Image (cartoon, rainbow, N blue to C red; front, side, top):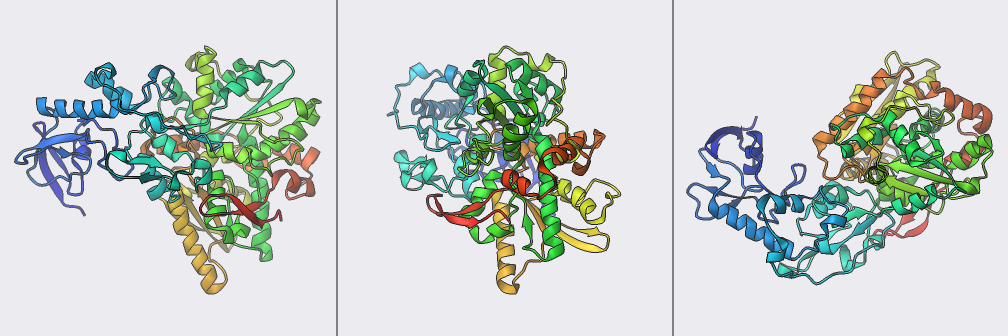
Length: 592
């Protein structure tokens, strides 16, 4: 147990553990010390200096983010000297920052803007120091604007320490230092896996998604086009936040209503193909498990994880499920099954997906994602992008009456909803895998051993006397830890003792994706996940194999899970990628 420390901050007695920083101790008693580079979920970089405080007995101010507390410490967070120092530091940052707040994508959601307003800093009082630098738009998912970068280091920390991708780094030294990609080659030629965690943690708009709202508006306003929309499970738990609703508020019905008001011809739910994914992936697992196939089977829903695997672990590609993600399954069915049912020419269909994830933009543009004979998903919008479109259309989201999705591909189960939280895919898969093996449903559909925010969760599930060892990892740093363990087991014994593994690229799963509301923290991600579990518990249908729309699509179109047409439309292959550039080297695995 950590030793407890007594100190005083602004005259208030505080008691915290000895490993606490001053900024954390202050927060525990409701004192918010201003900062730019600090984030509660990241190791402090001590980059900006805005969080300086005075400590009795110390000759100079100290940075609160990286200074630990000690017994009897007396801290002052506000004084004439501190205010002057903070204002000077902020003025220096602003002088080297491209200020276009009214049109900036982070307007009213920017830490720098907030601090400048609170401290009364005026940009016109300082001569600009900046020389405009080229914007990196090479990536299909993420734009990096060095003119708005404040060198806080958050993006480098999350990319290197949490995701272990190493696509961003600090180059040069002193006043010349800047955040860039290795060798300054651009995001597209780095190991970036497009997860967008750098975007979520960025306090300004130095990193943003590559937006496609203008293209979607043009399609919506073109009467010759037939617009079909899907929304991922996690979006229902976050979209409301963009309109002032509480974190974790479910807004399913309002979301559907907003999509119709925007002009979409058909409003569906990616949850439908999340259930379909379970049928395909569950069948794949059962086949491998019962026939001595390659194990462990590793889930394939997270496109950031897939590119990470292709780059760093292509030797484990045969372990990864060949199932496409729910987004891509949906896209393939929209231009085949849906087009056939509605007698719409697939060339006139524009397939739009609303995703919590910037990596979904990359996934939709993978060259192999055209099994329908067309590009399966035409446009991917993040939660933030669709929120801006709803606002532009003048729709009062919070006051919308709830509506339902269209039936053909809109019915879903609770198993699909929990896809958005870490552990959710595993829990959903086991609910149906148990049935596929035993022809009986689980006594209780809830598998709580795989829930929660622990980085790696393990459990053994008893399937009628057969022990199935499972693991769940979220964040790519934890995935790397788990994959290294599996690789070592295979090298030493020829096999792994795991049977089934879920990997989600983003901390917390899709509720914490790179396309979700800016600057979320782990606590907020946990609340969003709880909202999805709540919806699951309240739905009448909780098992993917009991979804009537899924049963119907197999009866009328796909024939059976794992059928020839199912493999053609719903399964994919992977590549080996260069570890320096991320470029494709060769095919790593084929559809099974």
